[in-house]
Length: 224
Image 1 (cartoon, helix red, strand yellow):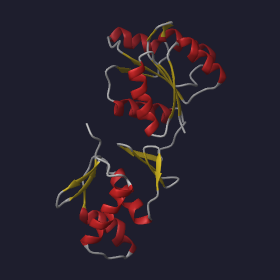
Image 2 (spheres, helix red, strand yellow):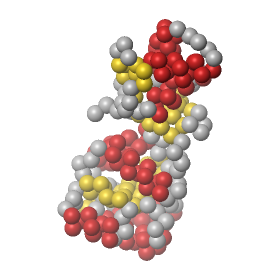
Image 3 (cartoon, helix red, strand yellow):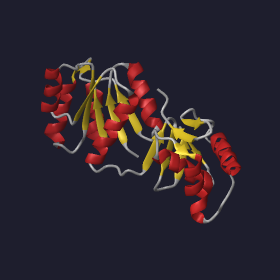
Image 4 (cartoon, rainbow, N blue to C red):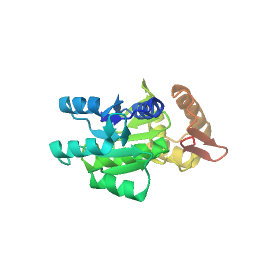
């Protein structure tokens, strides 16, 4: 599990980011001042450091430079700040940031940036798929709805996997029937798919990100 230290003095922003990342199976610790973050970093290294540049006891730039002096480029650092002028962004990268996100931001975009940094640093492999509150680990073949692990049978898992792999694209009923049943030589009628999808939805607590495209198919799609 990836661990994130988040240095942020706005409790509302910190809580929103923490809740979103924890749904995606990340462990998040929030620090409301630079001093506390330094103490934590001296005890244990996270997978990634999120830093707000404007803190009550100093500047995030100073923390970033402190990290780079002690550990070089080993720890990925992402700035999360309202300071979005070109000069601010350039200065952030000069001080050692690996990426820079300007507030306000979309949580899904932030999460994508975090994954990119973790991939680059070799700390994660692409084994997890996400959409809304749902996460699917292709290596462990496990499915979570928020923090709750959901037990699916083989057919339900294959349906969800196919939809998650095609997130943002509509998968037709014919495609689902062919790829989940027909490829194993099990020829079933259209009603079998309807029943299976109904049971899958019930087990996943009817997630709003699982859309029905009437008379055509299904699509996994984040709610805006």
